[in-house]
Amino acid sequence: MGLKQLLSVGFLGALVMGIAGCKQESPETESTIKEKESANIESIVEQAAPFERLINGHQYKFVGNKVIEMSSDEDNQARYGIISDAHGEIEKTISFAQKFKEMEVDGILCLGDMASNESLRYGRKDLKDDKEEIRNVLEALAQTGLPIFTIVGNHESKPDYEAAIAEVSVKYPNVIDMTKFRIYDGDDVDFVSLPGYQTFKIPGKQFIPDNGYWAKPEFIQSTGKLRKGLDDMVILVTHGCGKTGSPGPATIYDGRDVGNKTTTEMMRENNIPFAVCGHIHEAGGLAATYDGKIVKPNEFVKQFSANFGGLESWKNLDGNTYNGMAGVLTVKNDEAKFEMLYLQ
Image (cartoon, rainbow, N blue to C red):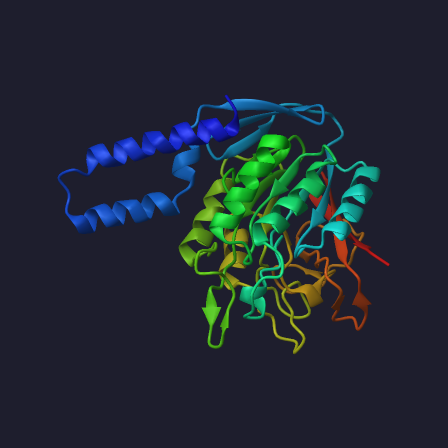
């Protein structure tokens, strides 16, 4: 039975249980239950029977909200390509995917904002269909044959992302949706995901579609619990960065740090030493510790959050305009380093 079938069985089971258990409840209680069920997609995943997949020569087991790598080696090191904020730039996605393949990385992390979503960004009608952009970005990465770990950012709507990931997963079983399977228990490194974005709106600006993915404070705090039981170094896979101080991974043009304080506190309290993020394009290539100490590329250290930029042409805080950037995260024992890749 495939993943799509398994999820369908789980959903039908949840629906039948919901109907059977709510016949005598008031309309208000029914509404509350339906709202909770639609919001908690993990309740659907957990009802699916465990299954296994062979991806790029490695065996992976899917259980509840967790993916477990069954294969192992003795090198105590792992390296992953990181790409964020593709915003429909398919050719650039292909270029970085090919580079990652040449570098023989262990997998690719896609940190969200695969669609451009012009209606959200600029208040105008989309020139390209968001679902198609998401699907094309994921396919470009999946064609490497590497395991692709993906989350949503602030630009994806639930209908577009869910439709795109369902289509792609049928053709490419190497795509792992960490919006649902939020824990990766790997051989040499573990991931915990924080899908969506931490700020819904501020005066004069909305960051997430009405039907998008909002990481509320309680959701962020509960993410720390997912770290329990993981025995390797843990990486937080998130679209939006935590607050570390400027200059850092969430620094904008005017010098302010717009990162999320709750995210940083959650990491510190739950011993999650590293985070990979994007969202703030101009801060691509910047990394810092919890306490705001700058971390430079290509240096092994014991803690940082790093921003891997985006694929659109963008003026960086360093004064240069880059045609697109991504990067690589290398983990060795209890330390990690990052390096940046740039398109000419």
